Amino acid sequence: MTDRRAIFVGGAAAAAAAATLLTPKDAAARPLEDILRGGELRVGVNPTLPPRALFNDRNVIDGFEPEVAAAIAQKLGVRLTLQAVGSPERIPMVASGRIDFVMGAMSRTSERAKVIDYTVPVHSENYGIVSVAGRGLTTIEALNKPEVTLAQVRGTTAIPYIQRAIPNAQVLLLDNYPDRNRAIAQGRAQASFDGIDSVRFALRPFRQVQWEVTAVPAFGVTYSGLGVAKNNDSLRLWLNIALYELHTDGTIERLWEKWFDGPMFTKVPVSPFF
Picture 1 (tube, rainbow, N blue to C red):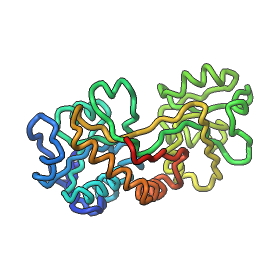
Picture 2 (tube, rainbow, N blue to C red; picture 1 turned 45 degrees about the vertical axis):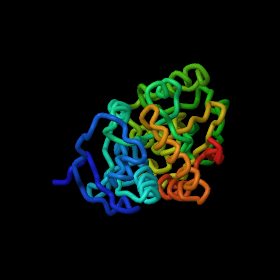
Picture 3 (cartoon, helix red, strand yellow; picture 1 turned 60 degrees about the vertical axis):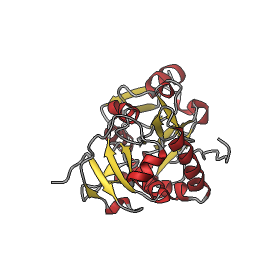
């Protein structure tokens, strides 16, 4: 039976991965020289966040982040082991050295940076509006009307913002994003305000609908990097150089467009100085 926790990747192609179990080694972060000596790079990804990572039809972890990790491992000249991690354990696992770095939409925040270090950004994270095209619902002002119903998922970070900035709109609270998308497609709601980076992938089942996805920069743009154990500077600095190369040669943008059905809503500012 395929082990859904860890996937071994040899070379650059994540899709060619075969299952293997990742066993904890020493509970300490491995510097770059130890990774090179061992010939293996261990990377944590969250397969519940498609298309960042997902289990494909062969029960193998695939997606944007596995392919970026594979490109990094190829540059390093080592094999790649992907470890499936969830949100609660991802930071403890990298801090303890069970994985070398963690992905999984790791937004760079000052609170997280107290316990782990970050590389330069891999991609941006954006909020915006999802609606049916042609209805003019592309601004916060257009949403803030009693005749507009917003389909939103309970407990998400957008809810407090809607209560403050879009108080006149009606809100239809649902349990998950597929229900949210279905409500807009069926006309039970006119729009939604939420994170939009993965939404084009999520809207694939509703290709009969002409969708409009609009970024709202005023809400703020955040950036996700690779999470590395605190003070593991030899690995972090090498990863910064590798990511700079993957940005400037177009690899990251190409993989993003492949998996997210379009370009990043906000380009990552790339600098050779970090």
